[in-house]
Every structure is written in structure tokens, then in C-alpha cells.
Image 1 (cartoon, rainbow, N blue to C red):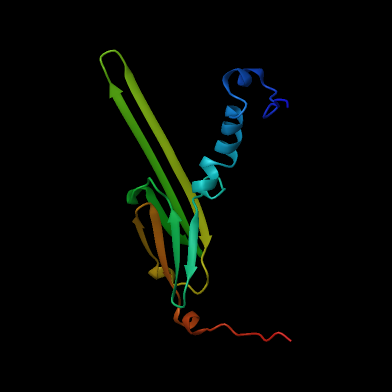
Image 2 (cartoon, rainbow, N blue to C red):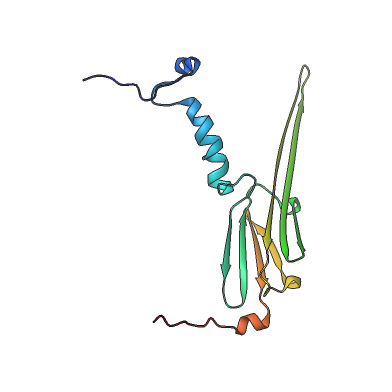
Length: 156
């Protein structure tokens, strides 16, 4: 029986500070930035775009956009030329002044999502509500769209 290294590393400094079973460099390069905590879980695999769900029934559409950590005042929602644009921006600054030092921390988070609205939506009656980190929209359908039922096509 022989002992085999878990991964062949090409960076000697990394070998000094990590074990063969936890690759610190791989953790930060791949899992954290490219396909892990930052993008995939919250931002749906897209940089700067939060995940959303769209539901439809006979009378309306519902859109749910995941945006935890924001407040109602951080959002700007507009409708122009058949597009619904959702923009959010949050800036935080914290400063601590002591006798012999000053510590100042800041953070910035923003995103922009633009959705093409269906032609059968009443743009004047779109309602939005933000609660528990979810921004919800209710888009009412026009009356003629409510009456249209899908045609069934028979397969020969």
C-alpha cells in the first residue's frame, strides 16, 4: 500500500500552509468566486443579478425577486417602452473614533434587472411589495388576454 497525494500542486507556498485534503487556493479561486458562494447560491449564477421566479395564472403574473439585505428605500422600479427595470443600491458606512485610532468600514451592493413585459399586461396596474428579502410584483392581465384559452392541437 502506498500513500498518494490528493492533488498535485504547482504552488509551493500553498503547500506550506494547507493540507492535502483541503486546498485553500482551490477553495477561494473556484468555489468562492467562480461557482460557489458569491454567484450560484444567491445570484443565480449571474454576476450582479439576483434570482427571480415568475408565476402565471389566468388573471395575472407574479414575479418574486430575491434581494435580502436591502430595504424598501434602496429600490428603484420603472416601466418604460414595455420593460420593467428593477434597480437597487445599498451603501453602508461605519466609523469608530477612539483616542489613538479611527476605523472606517464601508460596503456597497447594487444590481439591475430588466424584464420585457408581455403585451397582455396592464402596465398602469403593476403593484410591488418588499417583505422578508423578497420583492414581489403582481402584473394584472388585460381582459382580452384573460378570455383567451389555449387551443389544443391533436397529434396525428
